[in-house]
Length: 514
Picture 1 (cartoon, rainbow, N blue to C red):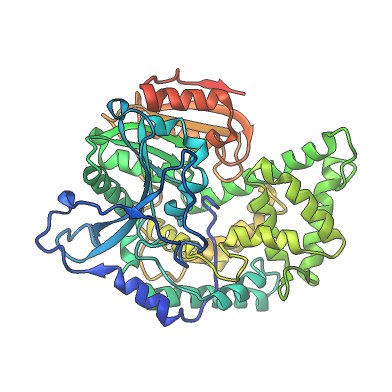
Picture 2 (picture 1 turned 90 degrees about the vertical axis):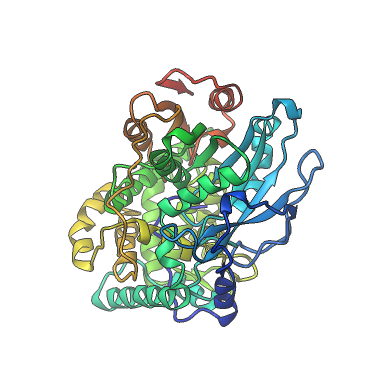
């Protein structure tokens, strides 16, 4: 799923059913309860909710064991810890090793913000089998996400309509349409999720993490954060440095950047990934089906997007593949080198008038299932970003910045620049220009950066390591492609990460894996 992309959506009013689900997640039964002493009732995991993306309950673990789920109570408002509560959904796989060797729980956050950890962890279970020999693997839906008091804004039909429209306006009429739909979305979020919106900041989620640590019975927080999960982990380390155990940050957010700088960095990152994709295509022994040179490949893609801006082509019936949908599909495919073959095939089909593969990639980016239902990742992404980010950008600011964004990426610059208006009319003020992750006194945190990462560019890893503080941030470089490093299955990266999490061996700072 996307890391820092400021996803946008149009809405009028969400359904009453979804609204009632949000309100049902809040209660007032914690007035005299010490939430750190609560006992979790672990049970077989249910089928995912609509907000989590639907589908089937998680399959059994590779060794035949079952996933377990539970709901943890947390304060709705951490400034009023004895007030109303919300339920946070957790999932775990018990350690597969000898109990005497068990270290504790290893808590994962897979990013977004807005991604469901309850549905993500089972998808990656095989990748973390080695870590499970000494840890219970645990993940969760952060507040505002999935089953954890989800932010609700738009219904499925309204989201379909939005993702069809032009997100890179070329004239006053298109600009007005984009501004109006963004404001409608923000107004709907306030109307339907007013109670939770002020309480989905990353600092709130970090306090939830510390409560989770205590409820799970761990003296220290052992943590694996990916993408936005690195920002959450950094904020936790700043708030609770003495409680950090063994922690790894992979696909690292630059904590020194504001929202504008982060979006500009992504424009450069995705352009680099596109350059690498084009070079890879033409470097193969067989003929590249997309062009005779890397520049030819990129020129043909640019031409396709220009044509789609004027005339969409059939996508997944009854929807058309628009320029915006095609751009989202290309961005999704650039997250992982494993998707490059699908991007090649999707572009070939689109040149022949069939937009179905690019549309399916776009649907994955936007959290749309094949049955037409959306998860709540778009709503949660906007809500968390807008609660965190203090800057509010208007159209005049975006138009001044367009040349800089286009210089960073002529393909993606406009889309990422216009994405900055998503918080303009947001009901809740943003917390800060950028997160504070300074963590003097913390245990070492392994910070892994990938030189070819499109969504969290490599430079962010060095900035995170520096901001965490001397003796805390330990940087490791992976010279590879895609978003993140551990799941590349590179033996050097996995050996360093496993060595630290399992045996406490801190790699030498500056280690490079190829």
